[in-house]
Amino acid sequence: MVTTCEVSVDDAATVTRMASALLAELGAGHVDAGVDTQLVAELLAMKERISGFLAFAEERPVGLIMLSESAALFARGTYGIITELYVVPDQRSSGVAMALIDAAVTLGTTKGWGQLEVGAPRQPMWNRSPRSALYLKLGFSEIGPRLKLPLHGLACPRGQGSPAAPTRQEPRRRRAPRRGIPDSTVPTLHNCV
Image (cartoon, rainbow, N blue to C red; front, side):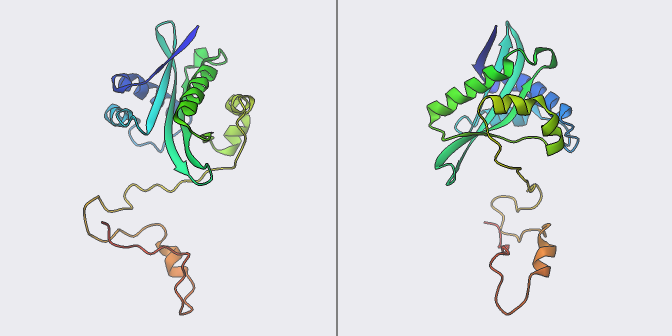
């Protein structure tokens, strides 16, 4: 029988192990040094925005789901994002993922979230993945791919008034049309505050 328990800062080592296994499995070689237990503990301490559940088969941790709360107009308020979902290989297809998603749905309903979203791996991997069938079976619908722009190293540290370093968008700014009217679609960098 699978049971779920909400994670706490005390679970940082277990969450770190499972998140590291997930990233390794997904081939996230771009993750510099894996997942740091200190960072995990700091995130778990952000209880107002970060939630999660561990799944246990008897006393053994066999799965993890991590959630982040966000808000948007399209969602008409707050909503949840599944940021990590991992089940140890020998427990897959045994109901662990479903139990974790059920816990997330219950939490989201309690918090008043309008919806629950999950990001998928790159499309070829997603199309071959049994994960896609699980999510679709549970009532998730595809809403399109997500894109990301890493921000580490692009912004000024908080509290410093120095100008921002050049970004990857600088070439776009240089190519922006110059017709005497500023291009309002190209953001202007200002000093950090």
